[in-house]
Length: 320
Image 1 (cartoon, rainbow, N blue to C red):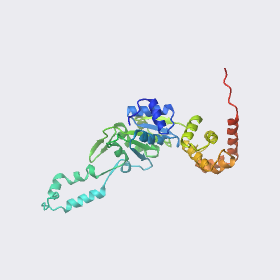
Image 2: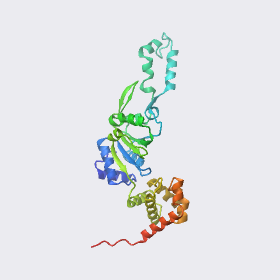
Image 3: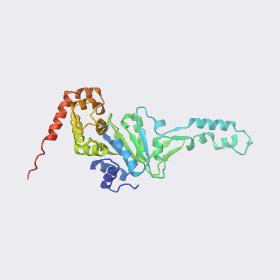
Image 4: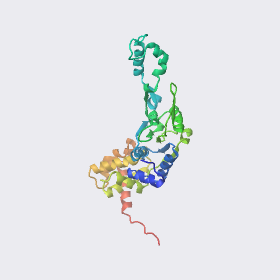
């Protein structure tokens, strides 16, 4: 599928893949695609950063290659490594080949020495491509979508290695040389901001901060993603989650937790929020025991009462 030609087309593309995006995010996605620059998405966990890469892969019919970052991630896991067992087999075969070619089916040792065994075993066919190298390889359906997920979990030296990949879409392998992508992949880099990412990396990307959605947009997302949730319950869920985000919690719930909670309540045939329902299901919404202990009980009852009062309150009459 062709790339979108404007912000409106990008909004439509995302919406057709069931992703409700603000116009600012759609603008960032469009400019990243048009300028062929990596898209750097930063924000709290659970706000839909990773989903952007999945949606682009699905909507554009491109392969999705995911590199999940973690502490200690190195080149052998992210870029390439040599197929040592296969290299050893090749060395043994070369050693077993008679010095004077007895068979016409294979090269003699002299032939192998002429070619250069070292050059032979450090060729492309002995290379195991990992996600970053895979993303630079040509594909029939167009350049893939490369998701570098949670870059803030990786070490700073790996961050520095990414500079060559994200600026020139190439990787240098000492034994072979520089491998360059025939066409740049679509790159999405995400960060939960557990640490600051170096400016040199950010400068090579189109940056966008993904914030929590407004109540109206989150209700739209919930209606789209969890259509079996009753309408009144959906409104109460979104209002309760937004009230929690105003509370001093260790980890406020993201959109992903909102959807998980809505699906859990639907499975329990809940029609409206009550103290008992909230207390029994907070584990689907909050992921730290201290947060659960703080909200459970009187705090939850107060929040429920507040949102019900607000929902019952008449809308203000617009002035003429």
